[in-house]
Length: 139
Image 1 (cartoon, rainbow, N blue to C red):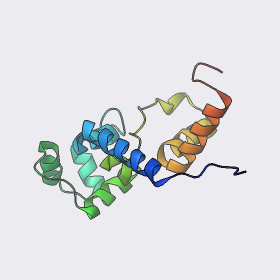
Image 2 (cartoon, one colour; image 1 turned 90 degrees about the vertical axis):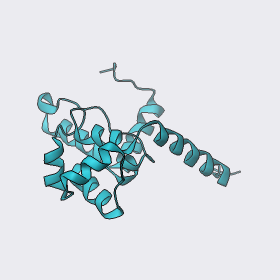
Image 3 (cartoon, one colour; image 1 turned 120 degrees about the vertical axis):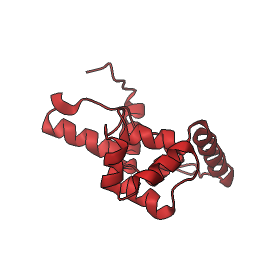
Image 4 (tube, helix red, strand yellow; image 1 turned 135 degrees about the horizontal axis):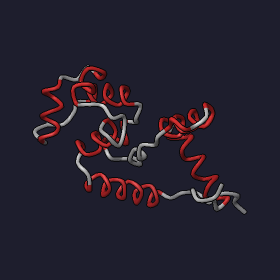
């Protein structure tokens, strides 16, 4: 008897196809804006440019859909935002909605930051929530 069922190549291909479909629903710019705009870091385009080292004119080309980021530009923007490249590229979960962290204690704030910035931690927390059948409404 096997303790954990093995995942077939079909499962992996189905997951990639789903991620690809999700990515097609939003443009690269929409995912990027969700990370740096009012729902994310609440940065201006100029601030994103300054913090990532990507020229503002390049960001404008991305916004218009004239071009997309190079691997280096994607890495710089991802690092500046603290968001994985997979999320920006549309292969992972979108960034969570912005939470007013001003009312949180230091440990609560640290957990939120860790949850948002670490894909592995997010999966673990989500699995715990699912396993315990918890919801946000419960104390």
